[in-house]
Amino acid sequence: MSVFTTADGTRIFYKDWGQGQPIVFSHGWPLTADAWDGQMDFFGRQGFRVIAHDRRSHGRSDQTWDGNDMDSYADDLAALIDMLDLRDAVLVGHSTGGGEVARYVGRHGTARVAKVVLVGAVPPLMLKTKENPGCSSFRDG
Image 1 (cartoon, rainbow, N blue to C red):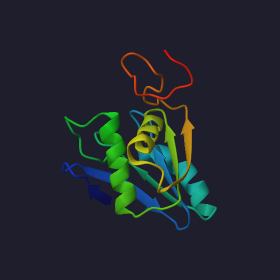
Image 2 (cartoon, helix red, strand yellow):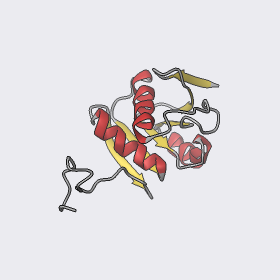
Image 3 (tube, rainbow, N blue to C red):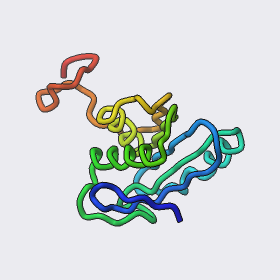
Image 4 (cartoon, rainbow, N blue to C red):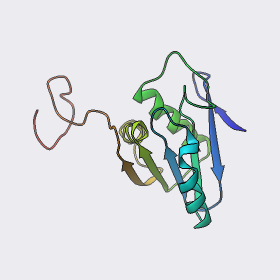
């Protein structure tokens, strides 16, 4: 079983199959990395390296009381990407995983990212409002 440990001591389970350009899959709530097995099998057979993790408090990862928020999810994803030294990665997120991927880009940038795919995503608030004045949105809320 492949596991890495985050800065706060949380153990995160992940799958890492194949070789080639990496595709990193982030699952929705309350799923696990297993939700992506079909896509991972397909893209792995097409010559990609495919990676998926069980988000903290999901599946085989540690069940944590704290850190179940988008910032922690994004930081966990960054720790996985850094630990595996991924470059030119395609990040795919579904539902909560889409928010995780969007927050990753906002917090950690795109230096290791080639593309982002959001599938039925629940992204962080991306509208400029009184409560979110720093957002550069298409319109003022």
